[in-house]
Length: 138
Image 1 (cartoon, rainbow, N blue to C red):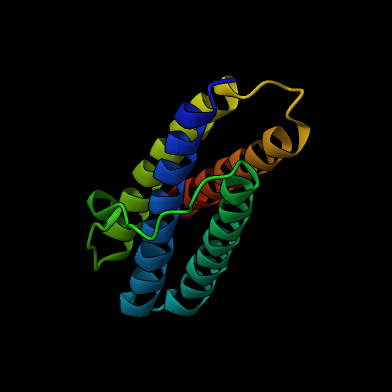
Image 2 (cartoon, one colour):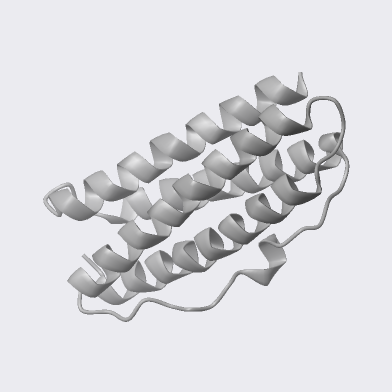
């Protein structure tokens, strides 16, 4: 296991989770229209999941002897104001997160059970978020 490479990837994922939390909370705040309330609630719920992912990543990074980043992946902070824009932006960002976590999962030996299962769980959540957002756009 290349510890340094995994720590770099975990911190990249952590910076992305920081940005996701900000993006979802901001998008939830600006959404308007007749369906705003349930969609705002859904976006807030996803934001809370992203915050939980960040906490889990911090724990795994420190568990490997690393230092969790406080950086935010600013390229993931994409403004949107209409329902369609918000859903499209977040669908694309969830796809990016899925790719990142799949790449990370492929780096981790299964013997690193806690780390492997943490990333596997986050990956499952990201797939669920993508499916939820795609249903809202349909």
